[in-house]
Structures are given as C-alpha cells and as structure tokens.
Amino acid sequence: MLTAATATLADTSADRRERKEERAERKEVRNDYHKLNRAENHMEVSWFTRNNFAKDFPEAKNVGYAKTKNFDEVFFTSGKDNLIAYYDNETHLVGTTQKLAFSDLPENAQKEIHKKYSEYGIAEVMKFNDNESNDTDMILYGTAFDDADNYFVELKNDRKDIIVKISGYGYLSFFKDLK
Image: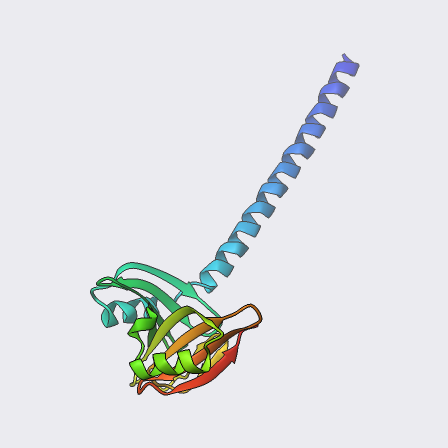
C-alpha cells in the first residue's frame, strides 16, 4: 500500500510539473503573439490616412494599404488605371504614381530619350502627379525630388540600369543610377 501511494504521489508530482511547463509554454506563445500583433499594428497605415484617402478618392476600387519608411501607400484602381497614393506623416496626400506606356510621354521627351539613350531599352514608365497643396518632397527610387508633376523612365542595358526624369514640360534630365 505504501508503495502504491508513493507511486501515485510521484505520478501526481510529475503530472503537475508537466502541466506547469505546458502552461508556461502557452503563456510564452501568447506573449509572443501579442508582441507580434502590437508590432504589426504599429506598422499599419493609420486611420487618419485611410479616412483622408476615402475623401480624396471616393470612387477608388481594389484598395490596399502599406506603410513604408517614408510614406503610407495606398494601392487602388480608378477607372481602368492602377495608382498608388502617397501620404506623409501628417496623413496628407503627397501625390500619386501611375505606370504608363512610353508613347504616353511628351513627344519631345521620347525623341530625346531615343537620341541620348539609344543603347538602352525602355523598362518602365511612371508618372508622378504632385498634390500642389502639400509641400512635402516626394521620394522615389530612394531619392527625394522637388514637388512637381514628373515622368520617370527606367532604362536598362547589359551594364547599367538608370532612371531619367522628365518634367511636365517634357525636359529630360538624368535622375539616378540603379546599378
């Protein structure tokens, strides 16, 4: 009888330790989940940005949000166009970008690119449409530039990838080396 009681006590003690360890593991998992959840929520686009976007683009469809180092970004469709809206730290619209075709560039800029950069192929064309009522400088391709509507053309060849900038008036200038 004494042996049976000792064995039962040992089993109960082992069971308690095991349950205690399981509880500790569950608590640790729960704490990790809450930490991760708080970090993700910290990286979410703010309610104010979402609200301002809804006012700025009431007809937007297929809306998605991302928080980046410099801006809150909102991806959306307007009509047939896919756009990205950029909001500053104060949740005000800085501007939008939209991918375009090379033929959408001003004609004089197309000719200038063919002349100056004939050894490059056209990779991508994008237009930045500035919100004139916000003085925040835009940052694209990791480089800030003054507020203004501009086109950006990514040009590639075997040795180099570059970006050229075209003003709203069609003036071409080198913007950045990518590689």
